[in-house]
Amino acid sequence: MKQTDLINIIAPEDCSKEQLDLFFNTILNGGQIKTSEELLIKNIKNCVLLAFYEIENKLAGISAVKIPRTKYKKTVFEKAKVSADEKLFEFEIGYVVTVPEFRGRGVSSILIKELIKRNPSATYFATTKSEFMPKIFKKVNFVKHGESYLNTSKEKLDLYIYNNDKTQEKSS
Image (cartoon, rainbow, N blue to C red; front, top):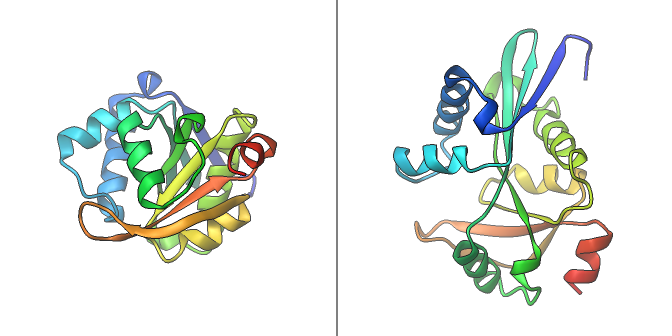
C-alpha cells in the first residue's frame, strides 16, 4: 500500500447512497454475481462491513464481510462434501472485485486482510468460481476444503475456509 492509497471500511447502514451505488455497480461490472438486482441490494445492506480500496482517488476494488443465510451455508458445505459444521462459520468473505486497470497489484488480498483484521478471531469462509481467487485466498490464509461443486447456475464453485486457530479446531 502506498501513501496515496485509501481503504475505507464501513457498515452498510453508515454508507452514503453514493457509496452503496458504487459498491452495487462495481459488483455488477465484475460479472461474477448472478442474482436479481433487488436481492443484490438487500444482500449488500445485510453485510457487516463493506470495504472500498482507492488508488490515487480512483476505486481499485471492493470486498465485504457477509452474514450468510443458514440454508445457504448448509447447502454450500453439503455440496462441497465438507464435514465441518457450517453453523460454526459466522461470516463469509464475498463481493471481492478488483477494477480491471488495478489487477495484479494485490488489491483483493489487501482488502480481505483488512476486513479480517477487524475481527480476527471470527470464523470465515468464502466460495469462488474465479480462476484468480484461489491464489489470492492462499495469500490471505484461506484453504480449499472439500470438492468442487455446481451452484444453481451450473457454475463450478470451490469452498475456502479461513485458516485461524478456531477454524483448524472446527474443520478437523
